[in-house]
Image (cartoon, rainbow, N blue to C red; front, side):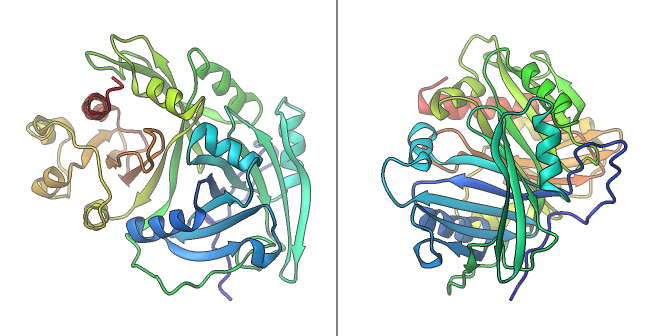
Length: 378
């Protein structure tokens, strides 16, 4: 049996300096209207591979979940089996969206105790779950909106994913597209709420602020937003937090909040070692991307200096480039992956850069505004 591949190489945690050592992103769970169809979409369009399944056949009576994996990224796609459930209410309010950001820890009980005594609202008491392959301990806390963090301790488990799941082996196995791991996840929160959640991650979870952007950094002629990036002690978990800022028209964050019904995960950034090939493969599978104005590329090399990639390939695919003191990065953003203009994905390749593409903000947000205009929501 294939065993679960952990999200990052396991670090040596230093509890004296980090009261909440996190080893990486364990999984991301989305509540969706149709888990089987969503799993098929992520397989066919994004190259994820089938991993595990749980539902009626495994003894669950209220929900069904499919787990797909690519590199060290695991998505859990969950749907209710009856009306009037908490999962169904989440979908009714938010549409398909991220409910759980699960974090891999050495001690889920200690993670729960450290965060709740610092003010986190409990979501899930430490719970031991076991089967013939060992046991897992999970616990959880609430964050912004209806998003939760679940702490996963799995050192004593050798099964395919979690107790209650069995191996899922459909015949449909499209090739992957070279996605490696979760680089960061961006949350959108309401007006004047950014600092509240920045303080939450700092005080409750021990994160540090990497960088901040104000409305002068992230604005166009029409819209603006504010953002701060929080990172855990070893830098493996990065959560930018966005809030709206005053502009002449409705910003992307306001549009998200309106259609999602409150704060939540705006996008998931996933890393690749070859963004040109990955994006080519994704486009060939009908994944749609935002397109920046053509003039973006006219002076690109003047702005970012020498890069290894061929300019015509970047131009034709719509890939953005930005540089910081440590190198450069390449990035591109999908259109929303559901009917609501909410959740989307970023594909990113880092060549030394540790930043988040500040030099691309204006072009990117103009592209988003174009899509908003087409939707009639700008």
